[in-house]
Amino acid sequence: MERYAQAAPAKVNLALDILGRRPDGYHEMRMVMQTVSLCDAVTLEEAGEGFALFAQGLVLPQGKTLEQRAAEAFFAAIGRPRPSLRVTLEKKTPAYAGLGGGSADVAALLRLLRERYAPAMPREALEAVGGQIGSDMPFCVRGGTALAEGRGDLLTDLPPLPDCRFVICKPDFDLPTGPMFARLRFDGSLPHPDVDGMSAALKRGDLAGAAGRVGNVFETVLEPPERREIQQIKEALLRHGALAAAMSGSGPAVFGLFSPEAETNRALEELGRRYAQVFEALPVGRLL
Image 1 (cartoon, rainbow, N blue to C red):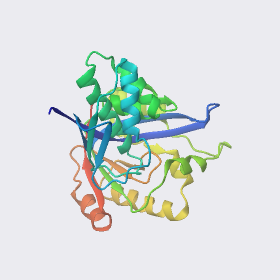
Image 2: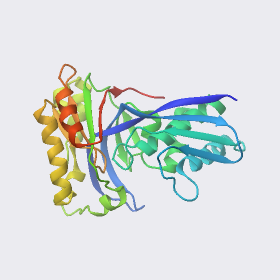
Image 3: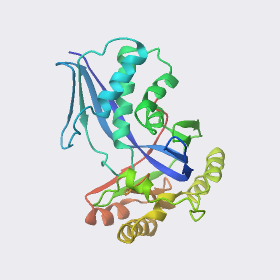
């Protein structure tokens, strides 16, 4: 029986700004997003009955998973019945970390479904299917380097991030996305990362200029114990040569951005002595 496989690369938010709540209940976002080589693996095959998802070490929710919903939306979009499918996830990206691991898995499944059942389907149509499942799905389908606006689903491609490396560290606690959004107060006190300045730096191929504009508004609503832990990780990354360090997404994973010639071993060793989930990664270009 034929099996199809795809990598599901994680993402980091080089810059993340939130402008306010939208009438539809979502938030107005402005972000520079980057795919990285830290990834899960997703395998698809026609097997069994109905839709089956297997993911070792991952507790699956009751009812339909995001993967099943995505498959149903895909086949509805191409106008044919969904066959019996078996999907297997090999997880490496930390869950509930702000790295888009779950969304990346769903996006990889959508790319696999397109490859197998509708290879002529335009990328924009596949992104639209992803957008029915989650706001960051269109970016995770596309990958690369992009400005994301609206609720995160309006994408503008940016030039690739210049050669660099990332060290990514997930501390030993989770920060669920919904409660993090609930902490935000749009009273004029939130600082705003320079998203336009970062976009301009990327267009110049200026790694130092992009690094100088790294920032995440979610860091301003961390509780004191969370803030101390995040700050300690950032300080370790900067102490060992990172050009910039910030929390990704709604956290709590932290990334350090290093120049391509920088030595990352000391950062990996120091953080690895304290944390179980520490990774080195490279930027990844467009996936589709």
